[in-house]
Each structure stands twice: as structure tokens, then as C-alpha cells.
Length: 314
Picture (cartoon, rainbow, N blue to C red):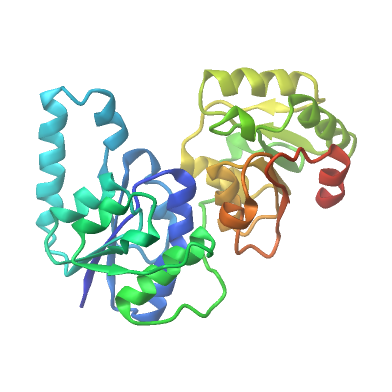
């Protein structure tokens, strides 16, 4: 039995994009034992995959904030020691960044990653024993699939399968009417959809008897969620929820409308109907992908109108 460590630490969308590669690998070799090295704040997502053996968690983001603290260095050393006790036969760095490559470099077994001309930080390729050419023209999901396929010796040729299922939603969080989730928050202001557009779309849905739910992850997002919810009948600005609960909420919604953010990709991975709104990024490269019920709208320098989004919802 081969033991493999898949390295994809962050961000949320990137972690989700690697899930189909795991599904492919286990389909090709059912006896493969796969662990996943991931940022601690995203560990809930790969844990939803039915074939994953275990999670190995790091806290690079937390450590980076206080990198002079000796306790963080001790924690990092202990994490590496614990990983090394597993004696992996090979590790595959699907992240392709220096931070992930350096983690890969200190691991036992064969080390695989992207060739220097196939990643954003070429120096990372020096940390691998074997490198692989992967086209930049492919969507991020397919780049991950191709990398793991080259490592293990198969060609991914099946439909994309993220392989995850969320647990049932707690009755205490379940609205009394059908709901739609508005994923209004994203990492950059340039990727946001105007607040007025969310409110106008919400008015249409409220008249149809649909409850609008607005999650958030920080104070700024909470304030925007509350502002939008106050303008829409029966809309709810949700408290902060863990990723597993959010996954359940997305999975059981009527549909999901979201901007370019990791949760939008999560909704697609859960086979949900999704309308993904792009205003500052190219959906051809990193748009929602592989879901028969998912639609990308917009693109760089575009602001989709409410009417076009509403037509897709209906």
C-alpha cells in the first residue's frame, strides 16, 4: 500500500480545487492511502472527502503573524516531526509556492511538484526531486488533476468529481421557508458586487417567498450583511459559522449566488446550483468549474446586472 501526502495548504478556493485530483487518484488506485497537509483554518473541507485517510494541519498564517515567537517555531518543528513519523512513500505539492515547497523539502520519501515553468514561484521547483510540466492554459482544477495523474501514472479522463458531502444541517439553523445564500464577501473590494444589486436581487426573491441568508467572516462583512438584510424582507444576516456548518447550509439551499470567493467554489463542489459573479478576475482561469448546475457570469471589468442574475436564478 502506497502512502501519499498531498500538500495544498490554502486558500479555501485552492483547497477545493484540489479535491477532484484526490478523487481521481483513489479511483485509479483504491488501495492508495492519502493524507492531506492543509492550513488549520481550512481543515474542515478535505475532511468532507469520503476517501481521505487523515488531515495533517499547519498554521502558517497564524505563525506568520508572530514569527519571532519561539513557541511558534517549536510548534512548527513538532508538526514536521509528527508528519515524518508517518513515513510517506511520496509527497505531492499541489500548491507550488515556496512556503509549501519548503514543507515538502523536509519530508521523507519521493517529492513531486510542478516544473519551474509551471508555477507562480519557480524557485519552489528546486525543492522537489521530480517536477512535472502542467499547462497554464488549464483551469486550476485540471492542473491539479494533471499533476497527480502524472505522478501516479494515469490520465484523468472522467468528469470532475469533488467527492464531498456535507452533514445534514442542524434544525436550529434551518429557516422555515426555502432559502438562497448570498455569498457577498470576497478578499478584494474590486471583486465585490454592488450592495444595491444584492438588495434589488433580494427584493425579487423575497416576493417569491424565499429567505435570503447572508454569511460573513469578519466585522466588515458582518456590517455589510446586516445592512443588506435590513433592506430585504425576512433576510437573515448569519452569525459566524464554521466551514462544516456553512457547507451544510450551502448544500441544502435552493441555490447560491456568490462572488469570486472560496465559498462559491464550495457550493459547486457540493453539486449545488450556483450563479458565480465575476467583476475583476477571469472565470476561464479560476471560475466555478465542473458543476453541471453552475454558471459563471461577468469577467474582468464587468458588473453583471440584476436582471441577468435573476433570469439565471429562475
